[in-house]
Length: 118
Image (cartoon, rainbow, N blue to C red; front, side, top):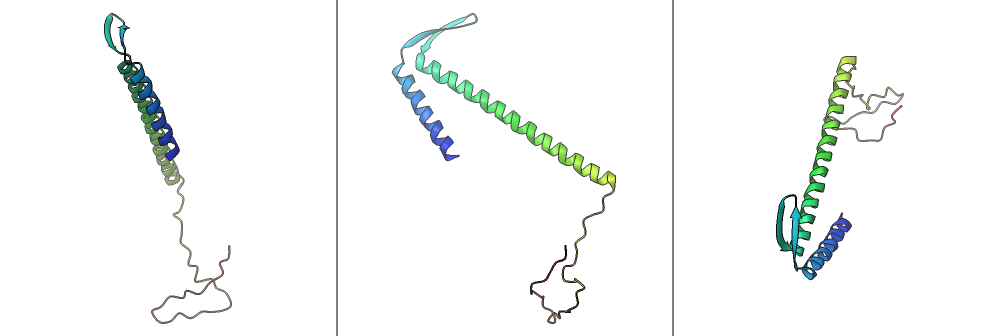
């Protein structure tokens, strides 16, 4: 992430240097309009429009991915309810039914390692 930030900063410095060195006025023609503006301003506005467009497309892509994920999660939850899957049971690991019995101190917890059969 830091590499990308440094790369963007270097690109911004290069664009600003290019714009400052080419600050002469140019005539802009767009459809029926015609106006004069600084070449640097035209370059910076074009970059800004491009950045906004790319950012907007990125946000739309993120939003669609989130919606797809949310819909898949809902479908998975609905399918598991329809099938009638039983809820996951929590097994009591302390009750292994092995040959040795371990006593707990009154009111305490047995923290000794136990074997789990699987």
